[in-house]
Length: 473
Image (cartoon, rainbow, N blue to C red; front, top):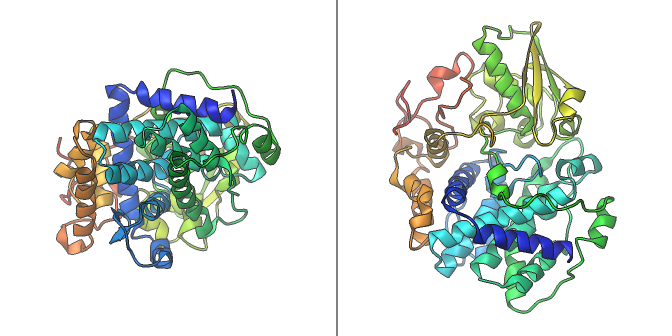
């Protein structure tokens, strides 16, 4: 059996075997990713890039841009904008951002086909399974060392698998869809600076996967062995053995608590724990952050990043945001204030945990804190209040908004399209910041996640625009 066929089998089995708990987890992934796309619509990249796609003319309502678009273009828009703030879900062991490449495909294709909510969620489970399994077979984050970005490499397989489930393709046609999706395999990780091109790869992969599955349904063919010999030669390593079956890869996917590069999350968590113990950097103090060696490939300590893309990867910007009480605010990384003095070093002890755990060791004024699991990781999941609050802040609505509840209850929806339409309406209604007292869209309300924010964050992060309030239960 070829690797394409193995991945197809895994994806279809995960979708078919998804019980209530997995479907509920998939709904949380859908809500989180859609909120990220809504926030991404206000990112500077969106204003430069979306107009290049031409006028909206089609039948799919993208979350990230007004108008009706061809379905693949809507997928490309929302996939790109979901990832642009680095706030979307991440499968750490595989080193992929499955939400960005899978959720828009499942949403838009499912809506166009008139699928029910359960069908869409099963498609999400299949897509996560395909992109994560393919990346894991080739080493996941180990690919960073040779300049490859796993999300760009294998993202199209995720959207192709999701689309195949929605099209009710059989095993052979699903494998063909993945083979067609894998044909233009590529996606280099930028050196020195990522630039906008890094994020465009997400949208390109997601849109291509949809086309690949539709092509397979129309009778197009592809090489079933493309992920075996050809991919091994291109990537410089053979595929590894299959991962243990039984638990869907979606269950190992994190929901992020900060809109910045993932290796910085455990550093921010460690910094917050030190602050709770009374250890806070004074102006001019250096913060020393130890990270896994591989993680240093795509984060920096740049005190003056060129733009938002580089700011999201800068530990100096993230630490300064924490000290200013804005580390959870996407707007901070788009226009950061003065940076903190940060030193990044490789920590061999963390290498032994990576990539299962993306840990950090932070030293401030002689005190050190080691954190292996960040809030939002599978071993430290966000509670429902936190998930709702994060989505509400990104969508520009209130955690108690019924449209958020409808997404979380998507498995019971007889049609998925009206649920998506509800979120699009929420985004359009939030375009005017005066509509909602409190924080503008694109600014995260406090998510009630431990560890607590650094001094100064407590008053800033509040639910529903009410200072000091909690998200309604």
